[in-house]
Image (cartoon, rainbow, N blue to C red; front, side):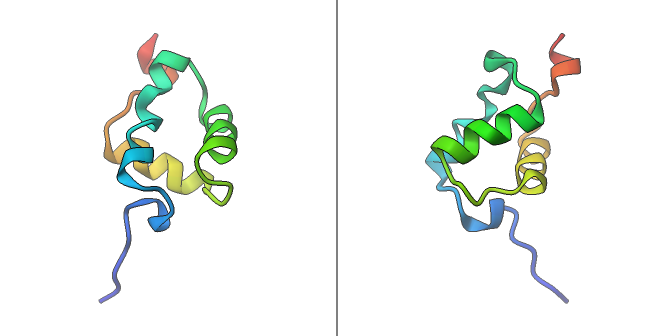
Length: 66
């Protein structure tokens, strides 16, 4: 049995993870959000890790936001 860490590889603190769901407010796509998150939160953040975290927190995609 393997263990999977679902907290963005442990690279973001819970406080920093709270900033990511502002996606709907910022109206950023995943790639643009990744650029911002890498610049201000963690330069080693992966696209896949960011996507998993958004899905886990049930953050709407831009298409769903409207």
